[in-house]
Image 1 (cartoon, rainbow, N blue to C red):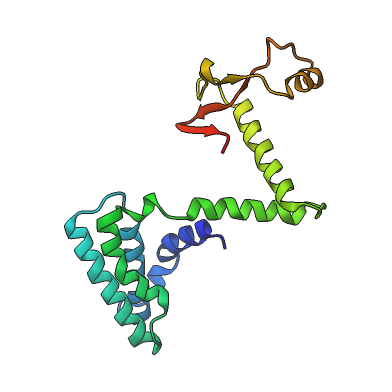
Image 2 (cartoon, rainbow, N blue to C red; image 1 turned 135 degrees about the horizontal axis):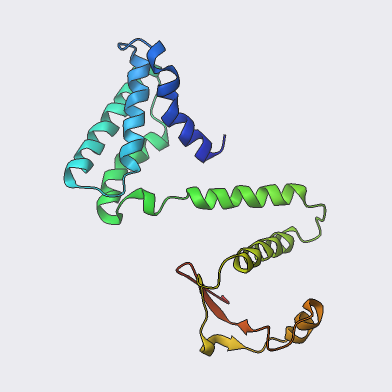
Length: 188
């Protein structure tokens, strides 16, 4: 499963099988503690009370893990201990987690698998991303794209592009910077 699929599964799993599991089952209690921990970590804001609850849940989770599975803690369990301090300094993890970057990585791996050329795979993947982004820009309404006259440039490829797309130089402009949905895109 992808990370997003696993996240959805974890949240819906108690609804699917929760009524079939006895209330006093220790492993089920461990799972529910993990679920509370995940929900708390994915909060949009944290108060001092939430951070104290998080510390308590992490301690409870780690002690239950040792007791139930008769195993030592892994590094990821130890890292959990530091989350409350990190949250105090950096804010909610939701704002700096890597899930969307992992999704992009997955997309690039799919492109790499289906690409037949292996001569310069990184260039091929970079071009694929550029084509996809250009497609998104062309499909969106111009209200979302903010362009400024001061960023207008004359590209070395303008004549070729106009000829290929049968455009006049009036219908086609190049910019060295645009803003799209709040993000500025420019060279470098």
